[in-house]
Amino acid sequence: MSTLYAFGSNDESQLGLGAASKVLATPTKLYLPSQIRDIKGGSNHTLIVSPTGTVWGAGEHTKGQLGHVTSTTATRAENETSPELGRRLVVFERLHDDIAFCAVTNDTSAYIWIDTAKDNGNSNLTIRPTLITEGYGHFGELGRGHLSTTHIVDEAVEGTLFDGVEPVNFHFPCDVVDFAGGCWHYVAVLKNGEVWGWGKNRFGQVGPKVSMGNGDEPNPKEIRTPTKLEGIPFAVKRAVCGKDFTYLVGDPASGEHLILGRDQYNLKAHTPKDIENWKDIGATWSSIFVLFQDGSLQGWGKENQWKLIPPNLPPLSQVAVGSEHVLALTKEDNKLISWGWGFHGNCGELRDDPRLKPSGVVSGWWNEIEIEGHMERIWAGYCTSFVSVKNQNGGT
Image 1 (cartoon, rainbow, N blue to C red):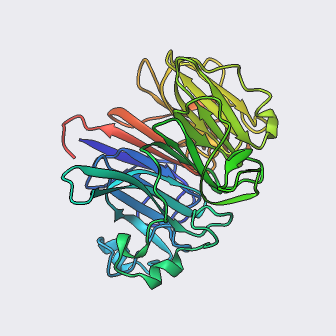
Image 2 (cartoon, rainbow, N blue to C red; image 1 turned 60 degrees about the vertical axis):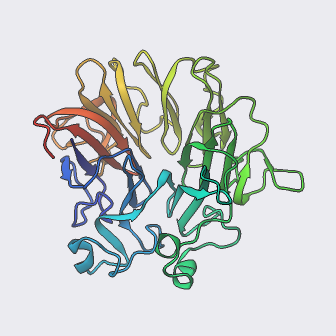
């Protein structure tokens, strides 16, 4: 078994630790009744997915981004008795089941739900990846056409799928293998190498050309339904999103990659020719990071506040990229290190370090964060950090 630790911004209880706090620099234990497959963080809310597809959520709920949650559906005493109920979930609440992937934007949550249904009485099961979205969409992030909020849906169809929110009237044509969200847009990578996206597209972050049904329309500013991105010259394997861009990568053997969207801070101009032998990818709001199989890390993009790659960085086994900070595990000795904008404690305790820049910026060096035990997985969100640590005694 493993223990999950959380630290960083907790203004809206997005760390799920109970009381809200602006700064939490000390890694603090979280108690969940399940193991963890993935963690995604929005502006002020967090989703945790278990290996069996159960989703837990905490944090701000003013715009319905955590679904149809009322005192009758809350399962934890802290949430049932909290005066913040309806505004935030102060601890993690079980939200959904049978979820393959989840992603978040600032004020929405999206899920790939595996709808297992019998095909016309056939004993074989047909798996249909279905999109579920919740919250408030500014630019079509909900993928529900002109509907901008699911609060209306919640009140109208109480008791249906997901305790109130109907799925988007759309099925992906084949399995989804990756799912990512930026500030105001989503992209889903399919098993066949296609990419589908929706949301804000002012800078072409959901594609310079998209298939709109009546032919390709060049760069529509908003895409309000899931739409296939056209013209991508390779089969896509993974995707990550920044504030106004999308980064797509192909097979590690070839290293093909592509940036769609805003070319701020010379993001496209500094793009390497290829990223052959990539292991993982990540993006801040304005930068891209690539971890390679040999443990080296490459980054490019915005660098006027903090250096993207500290000098003498050791080989890394894992990297997690948040909105403006990086978490990493060293390959040789499993140390947890972090750098970037750490004002909210998301880079760990920094108060006594003379190298620290104003506003909590860790630049040109890294901060080592001590947690007892072997660190297995790391995740980073909007100024939030999460670490899964293997228990030494095998207990919970």
